[in-house]
Length: 516
Image (cartoon, rainbow, N blue to C red):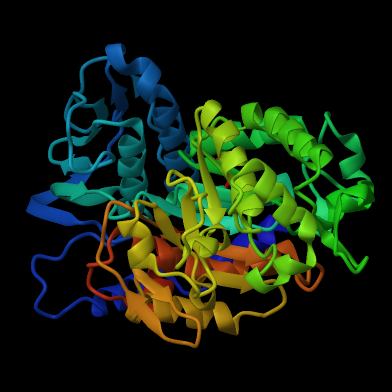
């Protein structure tokens, strides 16, 4: 499967045509030209001449930084061998002309935590104050060296505009193999995307092995075992990617509620909701806590995603008096019925915080705050992901929430839509969209000022129609918008690429996805 995928990528366009066309999309007055890269680097200061790898060239790390740099050095060595046929040994001695030197600088206050410098002279020096930044420097170097052993001399200074740049995969509805997820991580790392959000559960499946509640896995096959997760986490760490796990509560719980029908939300009329959990029931809270305590230690990354989308609309709460009764008993006598929902989300957040992580949620969790004077407020530390056009991004940031862009017209891929929509999405990203442009219900778009509270954006694969496409088809279809997203999250101010220009550059870097 992957040999077919890679073969199709390599025949996408020839390298010569790709690079020449890519050059053509840069402004005619741009001088001096900077080396081409996805995403475009922030700054390049050219020098005279070129650097060429030679027999005897090495990858050099300092003895005192061996533990910090060795995994990056080993990966770079393997990749240069696989992609360019260059064999560079790793040394912990002094660097000399012809070497590639990897350095960690002195930590300190810096405007961009993952900024790096890639200085090409008599040797190549990649330097950053963080291992993430150093890793990104090697991603740039791999693209500079693709198909050649020579690069122009000069200094690249580069950093991401937005810190949160990623891909979400709906593995709850559709099983994606561990190897497929690894392949996508290699592509993500090649273009400096750093977040893999895994939506493990939905109405159709509970895809993550549970030891505390094994009954939840009945009817879902295959599942990701704890061993699978440890393997994926270790692999993600090698490529400097954070895995963000999501167990969606209290809606989209169909798979859970098949095992526990007694926890379904039942209206006063007797009508039962098969996919919504009754969060006024102590047994429901106990189950959620069990799963959080089981899974939080399994994922070492900084984030946990609670879901929280599409539970009930305000007008529907009157049909479920048990929610109103719980709010009045546990929040305040004047509490609104939906304060039960807010209290539930805050409860999850408190558990996540005690585990040393930050919680993320779909912005549906925020919508009950708008225009209300309820005694209970949503915790401000919960990062909000805006997708459906009903939220005011500027107001949310003003209120102290950190947000990210998930605007569905540009950032959602639904399995089965084919190749034309993601191609259109990529074109839109490159020409008119940026991570600070949010979709508004009704079809308009609103741009908000950049802020530290605006974290970035993710592209999303949703698998409502799980069997409509194969893994290979999905991987091929999402490649363009994923690379366009990387371009706009890293350097939205770069000279605009056309869609054909992006396609051409992709042909020059796609071999970095070959398994090392």
